[in-house]
Length: 339
Image (cartoon, rainbow, N blue to C red):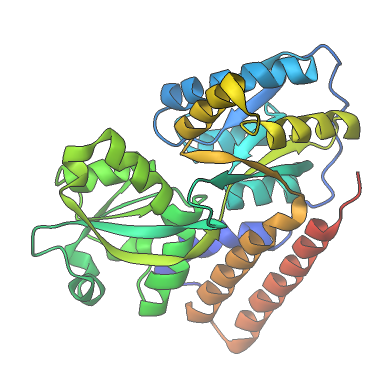
């Protein structure tokens, strides 16, 4: 039996990698005059995220000659549930959620974001206050049960998956059970929790922390970075497969061209992009851009299985076999570039 300390994390990732409904039932084609429902990954608050995206989506509506409505929510889970209920036609999603949308909800990647720093990704962070005693990685790893944790939801790549995979599990620490207490929320929420002494350490990422420094300079001055991860690929824009290839191509062309023009129009678009997480624009992408996200989920599931307690080796091997077959199915879906 899986230990209670590992069960939550294992279930979250293995639900993705074992028994996936990869051949989900196709949905009816959307009506030509129906609004395209755009889901926004929560970065700060729901209203803040929506107001940042409104100018771009208004131009997208004109470019594709269809109305575009906005779904802005306060949590990854709320957006994930909306996608499952087929209430979202197009979305801005990070790797894990984009992966689920493509492999389980019949969506396709059309673009990937690019940031001003030019890097092909961002890094997960651990933040702590500058004041001792809770400002040392050595003391964190030695006695996590003394620390109060603020982290992202389980769907969050930088807020949960990567810190769990690259830092905590290798040090025999399960994030959900080893800390004194935990706060779960957006990256803004977790950083504020540490700055205001409501938590001792927070997961975050380089892109959100840069944004946080601009919006909360006084609070950011109280924080230091304890740890950085390897590079994580940037977020994607996904669109329902039921939309025609021609419409998806128009969406992709609009996104790739947005902010590239010279003159006042391009300048205005670049201001909008900067408000969207300091973006420089978008590049064309397809489902294969999610291979790194699939590999991260696979590695975490495998590490959870290896470190869990089992009745016998046969049970462990059975779980590992399901993980391997699920990952093989997933990578096959991501290699499928059919229209």
